[in-house]
Amino acid sequence: MGTMKLSKCTFSLAMVAIFIFLNGCSSGPKSRTLPIAQSTMANIGKDADVVKSSSLELRVAKDKLEQAENAAQDKENETAERLAQEALINLELAEAKTKAKKTAKTVKDMERSISTLRNELERAQ
Amino acid sequence: MIISLKNKPLLLASALFYIVFVTGCASIENYPPLERLKTSYGQLQQNQDVNNYAATQLYDANQFISKAETAADKGDKKLLDHYVYLSENHLKIAEEVANRKKNEAYIEELSEQRSDLLIQSRTQEAQKARNELEAYKTKNSKRGTVLVLDNLLFDTGGATLHKGSQRNLDPLVRYMKDHLERNISIEGHTDNVGGESLNVDLSFRRAEAVKNYLVASGINGNRINTRGFGESLPVTSNNTAQGRQQNRRVEIVILD
Image (tube, rainbow over all chains, first blue to last red):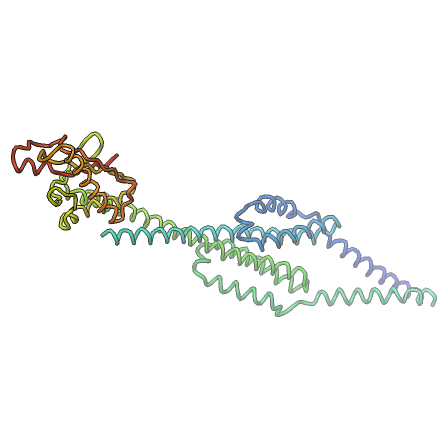
């Protein structure tokens, strides 16, 4: 009986140990993406075109980056890494969107100038 | 017994951890955000532009879909949400990149079109300018091209331009409208019939009459100078009727 109880006790302790171990493990190594997200933000966040045409993505990226930084301070490394990745992808989206908008505007401008030229040519004939 | 009782809460706690752990492990199936993501991925894969221009981004999105599926199998909802989020954003980036690259290709086409049109327009302009001034007798002077209008009819001794002669000025009007950078000087001349000061006055009023017609046709008066030279600068002898007719003239200097 005594041995049975002892083994049960050992089992419980082992479960707790496993849980603690797993929990501790989920913290993982320091975030590798966080510094990348920070420097990307420093570059893209200043770009006036991005600020103008992708303000939402930029805002989300800023929030995520801030959360990532807080998580990193609290040593929640895995959370920090995920949030940094999410911030970074928002920055990439902001950049892609801004470039696409700029190109679309160029197309519009050129179409307008071509149609003006065409009209002028026709009128002159 | 005492040991066992003491350990009861500990047993319960570990059982609870165990349940949580096992439940957490159960795979997540038909997770709506993941299903939606896969649908969008399928749609973009069918999209020719995205396929042509944003294959890398599409590939990245797919990598994260696989990771999301693995996370779903493991029952890790947080990680699943994370990968779904990344994949969704890769798809959005794919669309933006495809849009941009498609437009960039179109811009190349447009810029070719535009330069063609510019060449056409320049050729046409040069041709037109030649045609416009072709209607006039011209001579060159140090001050620029001079148009010699000796076929303008005015009332005898007066400065009213005949209706029929107004048409002679229309090519000049067109020229001035097409060349806003050009200014002109209108200079009146007479033959030697009549007093000299009267002739100076008459030639000036005739130059003014030409200017008035141009202004009435929409040319800015600031671009036009007028002068009257009277009989002082004949182009030929005043001895014959034909000579006198040639000397009664309006000259228009296209200023450089």
